[in-house]
Length: 356
Image (cartoon, rainbow, N blue to C red; front, side, top):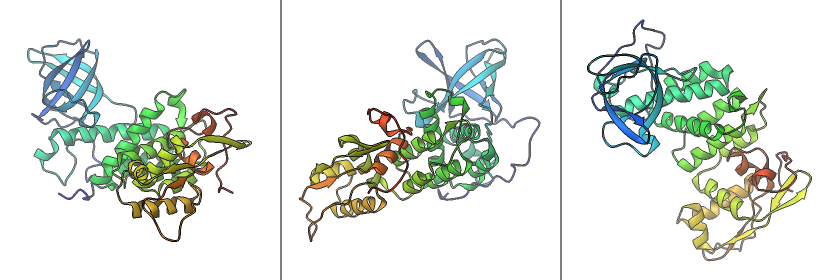
């Protein structure tokens, strides 16, 4: 099936009194005793709970931390597993029945895709994706309550499988950025910004770009009434490819920063030879890198470069992030203020604007 096939949920308006349970023989649940993970086969699972074949005998009502993944050795990569909370319901001689304790606003929909066979929908990867969709919906609905319905519809019905994976990644990475922030549970983001970040960001599969979008979602979240000051940065990110973001990250990290006025930070240029540029950009195509640098200069992210009459791939290039470029990079790392992000005094957030 094409990854661009749209996910239509013809049963989204139906609600069953008892969630349908199905066998998922390749799916397992890990629970932890101290630092030791124990794998329990899952006899059956539904959108509300599961039955674990386990020697444990948790008391009814006891909370349990579980990690769902494909049967086998414990997955070190979080891409191939998901951690959830569950509550023990009952036990018998074979194992324990548990009910899932999902985040508020989560909308888990197992077995509801009319485009997949029953066997396909019980594959561990398909089940894990639905849990991640539910988790992403819960997070986005929490930081953007007015768009809860639109977000649910977008992730359940409108995005292709290809884009859905990326949208989930943006949401879950943004949640991770925010989890250590003070009053994280009170942070809110503008509906227009939240939808545009998910819609625009989901087109990219580059993990580097997805992290930038996640950071921008986090820096767009504020305690209280959300503003739309991040919209210009959303527009800028929509015009950047993988070379652009890597060059911006490299230049913003290495360039010496200076305070050039009240609430304003600029930088000094850094010199890069061909080998430096290829390493920073993650590309060996110097012609493309040169063109991408011109595009970044046109956007006002780096200063205009002095170029010879003809392009020389061995000539040094001087790259100078502008105030706008530095601010974009800070916001894409979850920070609004460039002064604090770059370790400078007078943490005043500069207004977005073109470099003089």
